[in-house]
Image 1: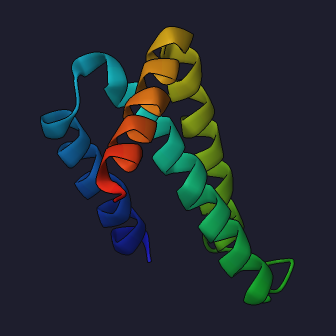
Image 2 (image 1 turned 30 degrees about the horizontal axis):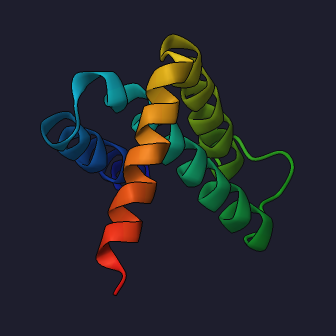
Amino acid sequence: MVTLFSLLTALPAVLALHMLEPGLVLPAFSVLLFAEAALAGIAAHLIHMPDNAEDITLWDFAGGFTLIGCAAAVLGEPDQAALFLTEQGSLRAASQP
């Protein structure tokens, strides 16, 4: 499970590094981590684990993704996040007929 979440985080991060401008990488990485945290939280809610589990659970992954996503959001500049969102909106508007 650790390998799966590592790949789900590393592959989009590497693609973002190559495809986006350097100032847009942290906002995009933050959004990615928040989405992964939401998916891990939903999966943890659906898969009931005992409260005294000694291993790493999906709740731990959700918390870790949230923490790292918050750090990426804090380190990124707000104007870069606004630029990322407007860039995505213009791409979506251009692709519609």
